[in-house]
Every structure is written in C-alpha cells, then in structure tokens.
Length: 229
Image (cartoon, rainbow, N blue to C red; front, side, top):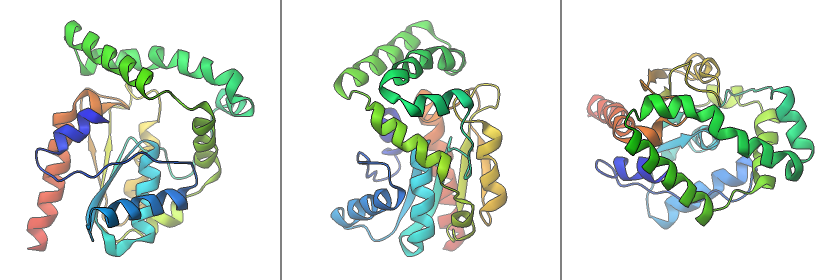
C-alpha cells in the first residue's frame, strides 16, 4: 500500500498499520487503538480490498469516530466463494501456493493497462517482489480472512453507516480479483453512498495509479468538508 499512502500524504495526515488476525471485531478495535495512539478522535476511514470490510464494520460500530468512509475494491457484503477457492481453504498450505502462483496471471492484463510504459511496469513488478521478500505472505491468515469474507454478511452494517461514503472500483473487465458488480452493491445498501470508477485499473488501482486514487479521495473528502462548513 506504500504508493497509495505516499500519494494520500500529499493532502492528508495518513495513519496506517498492519492488521493482525482475521476477526472483524478485533480488527476494528485495532483501528480504534491506532486512532487513540495518534490522539485522533475522528477521521476518514479508508479500506482497500479486505480492509474495506474492516472499514465498513468500523463505520457501523464507531459512527462518532468516522467522518467519512472510503471503500476501494472491496468484496461484496455477502460473498459466495468460487468452488476452487473453497477447495483452497480446506488445505491452504497445499493449495495456497497455487493461488499465489496464479495471481500474476490474473493481474497481468490490469497492470499492462494501468502502467502502459514497459520500464515502469518492470519497476512496479520488482517493487512487488521486494515487498513479498521483506513481508512474506501468511497462507493461514489469507485462508482465515477468506473464511471471514465467505461467512460474514455485512448488509446490516451497511444500513448503520452514518458517514458520507465513497465506493471506488476499477473497470469491470480489468478486476479479476473482486467482481466490480459486487462492490457496487454498497452504493445501494449504504445511505447516500456514491461510486467512482478509477479508469484504466482493476483491483490494484490504489497502487498502480496512486495519484489518481488520492485525487478521488481528496475531492470526496473536501467536497463533504465544504458542504458541512
């Protein structure tokens, strides 16, 4: 997430931390603790992919501390895993490496569109490899979070969101990780939510086109701040 954090930092004070575990309620408490440590009472809460589910639960449980909500490339609030993913969950240490190995094939078409320059693409890929080496993937945590996605229905949480909400998706034909039509469900379920499509991206738009992503978030937050004033 470093590219997104750096781009957002041009307009915001950004507080980020590593999520520990998979239980949504405990992850929300980690976010609360992060705000407490930073002595921040109220903030825009932004979640990407699985982090969007944590951000949504935070907004539902902590309305006084959520000034605005941003969900980017977030799985739908009630998701049925594909058959092969259900198989992966039964033995993550066996099938997890297969899932990881096939990820570049799923993401390659998106990255080629988002980063058309070949040299920039190589630099992006190299940075991703370095990140994997310095912060290895936990297959058991991935499996645990996938189970949360498959067994938790967050539709009721959507109805409890009081803050302005922005749903950011990529283009439907480029996101081969989280179906865009599933993310768009949030606009219907969250009161007064709106959706923005980050062009030329799929699931990874926040890091393949971070400046454009940050501009969308900035315009959303400043627009609501001006309206409130």
